[in-house]
Length: 350
Image (cartoon, rainbow, N blue to C red; front, top):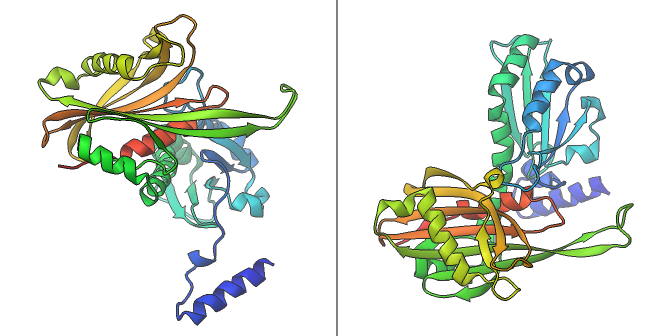
């Protein structure tokens, strides 16, 4: 059947006068985001090199999280165990000693769309085991970034290829930013200085030893956008941004229980973390933290958030965009990755 499909595609392309490219004939990559197949021989996997590789791959994902989550879901296989289904995985990493060649340094080969479309296959190899080990200990963060950036960049392309046009238009008019968020998002509040968009999804969980029946759970991503006139530099400090955030959320994002509202978690263990950076040449601050409900002891709920604050020089405003996640039954890593991708689509417009 697969050969018949390929032959049919070849005939179709030939009839259109187009020569098929190699990628035209590839199947789509499969597997969940962040799922990584690691190819290593037993002698490497069971030694210092395997331990060093897993030290990097098993680091905590970029959060803040209530409970730490690994950066990747790793399945290790020997190279000869990679069957057809494994070849279709989104992320594949091979670490090897190449005794048949001689290298001056450790080589990192990045192959996109190798076995499947939408796939990243990375090979890290060297002829010298000691040098390979040194590279993994000291420079393997480069490989980890390639893997993470590939997943986030793919989401960015997806959001830019199919976005909620109403949100994009209103954000451009009211706040001077262009942002691409999924088409299935819904506007809940829309005013000249505050906007609240919700993206609700459901996820089905099959019954297992810990559940009595199959169940479907609700997951929400919310996007909050607000702005204010720029007056002084304190508005662009982490402390100033959080102070403004708490005021805005208290009056604009109520909880379901009367008197409750969205607030920021300031417990020392989960304290928000901020960094200053340039976003498309604009001064920007990123803050990662946890949100919670406050104002009523019986209110519950919370989760991670990622927030960008940008100085819009042309409009002389400070623009804040916050993406929060509520999904108490599930790990948050990939929902946070989606939040990062949405925020990275932001562009300032006049």
